[in-house]
Amino acid sequence: MLLLALWLIHNYLAALAWAGIIALASWPLYGRFVSRLPSKAKHWAPLLFTSLVALLFLGPLAYILLVLGGEASLLARLLLEAQTHGLAPPDWVERIPFAGKSILSWWNGVLANPGGFATWFQKIGQGAVLGWIRLFGAEMLHRSLILLFALLTLYFLYRDGEMLAMRLLSLIQKHLGQPGTNHAKRAVDTIRGTVNGLILVGLAEGILLGLAYWIADIPSPALWGALTGLLAVIPFGMPALYGAASLILFAQGNQTAALAILIWGTLVMLVSDHVVRPMLIGDSAKLPLIWILLGILGGIETLGLLGIFLGPVVMATLVSLWREWTHVRDHPV
Image (cartoon, rainbow, N blue to C red; front, side, top):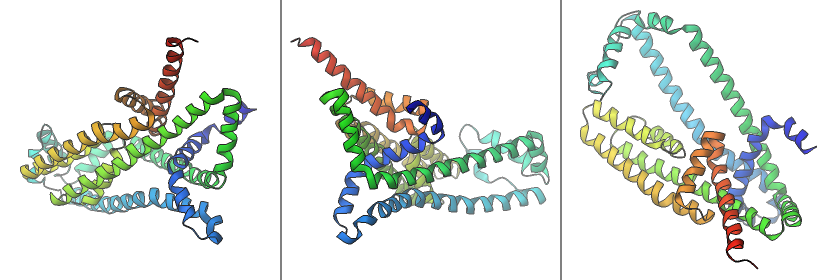
């Protein structure tokens, strides 16, 4: 029956896993939130806190989509002008490191000539591009449904989480004994440490880099900062963004700001990835740095974004079992 149930809901297992991770990571904060509510309003606590979590996720996403929508309209106007009258390349395009000459050649052949963009678009395959756009739209709709179902599940976890936790711990205690209970608690600590180490540190990195983008006078620094914070969750994702910002500043002739962004971004990344994150994740999971990195990288390669949080849990449980078994062998009764 369990296998049949898993087969029936396998398309929604990711949503259930996300809801479980969010609930476990935020449960201490939820407890403090409930304790500060008036007694008459406590039954509204699951709905209110789920709404706050939804706002936390959807607020930055809505802002990014709004800014990107404005940029897309500007891009559409530029493409229309290029198609009608031609668009001369900016002076800084040729100064882009490594790819400046290639981009300039493409620009002169496609955007600088009236009608050149339409010819180029047909040459690369209009049907393939439109098919990709439809596929992207369908994928976005699917992800949105997963997010909504995860938030709905999260509400029920906040409402009935204490009873569910008691039953799970009772089941583990019954069949696996105290070692199983210890492993379950360590898994919860690992999830909370991973969320703190990735999400909170990523937020801090986005703020620090966003301030640097603002000082360097990069257009839409808040958007760049938000994207930096999002990519900071993914290993080696943040350098791609602040590196791109450095290249843009360098191409525009602002070499000092480009070097400052590169140095500051690298410094922030080194401190966060090699000091703060290992301290937060490793202390909670009792994991060496190498196992943290293997869990995160292997998890994201196997399970996508969900694997970033589940990978360290698997590694922490495995290392805990290894220590337990080897400890028994080294000290026989």
